[in-house]
Amino acid sequence: MAMPSTAEAPFTQRESKDPFWAPATVLGLAGFGTTTMLAGVAIASNGANWGVDNGVVFPMALAFGGTTQFVAGLVMLRRGEIFPGSAFVGYGAFWWAFTIFLSGLLGTGFAGGPTASYDIMWFMIIWFLWTLSFLINANKHGWGIFGVFLLLDLAFLLLSIDFGILGGGHTVSNGLWEATGIETFITGFLAWYVATGVLTAAHHDGRKVLPF
Image 1 (cartoon, rainbow, N blue to C red):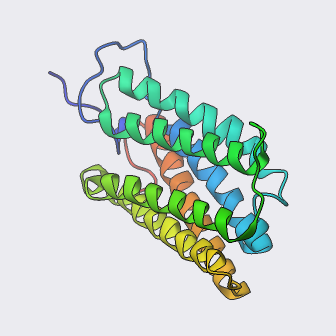
Image 2: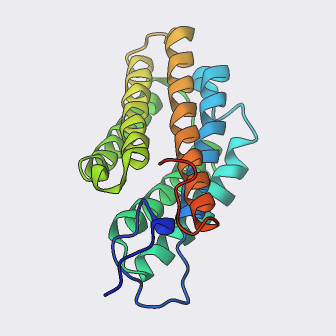
């Protein structure tokens, strides 16, 4: 069996069964990274109302962070790549679920108050655990991917704390919201950087012009 090219790094572990399906690593990472950067800016700027008061995040989350990333995951699963395929499908579904909840697309939007905040806290905790599943295996896929999952797990932890504080009837300081937003933005930026590195390597005979 031929070894995978470095252009398909950091995710590809074995040769695709069907060469018709090109690696979807760039699409998946870019969909995740760009949407996460936008969310980070909104969190830092709007605090608890980052989703409700920001009309840019929802469309981006549904189209690029959700749909495109989900499709990228299906492509990678078709290629036999369980790590990126599961990650892209999972986080694509995350953006769908969170957008549907906050926007009220199914008729029940974010009503605010302690109960809703606790609901979001547990939502973030569950995604913290899902991310942890990938973090403990991410070192096999290069420092860039490991960094993305490490920062993402920290972002979910910070969001859990933020909404836990709100659920307890307390006010989250602007400084904590800003720190959460900045950390979330950095997470997305690193994912975007790795996507750019993979794309660049694919156009330079597999050489990592941008290290990742």
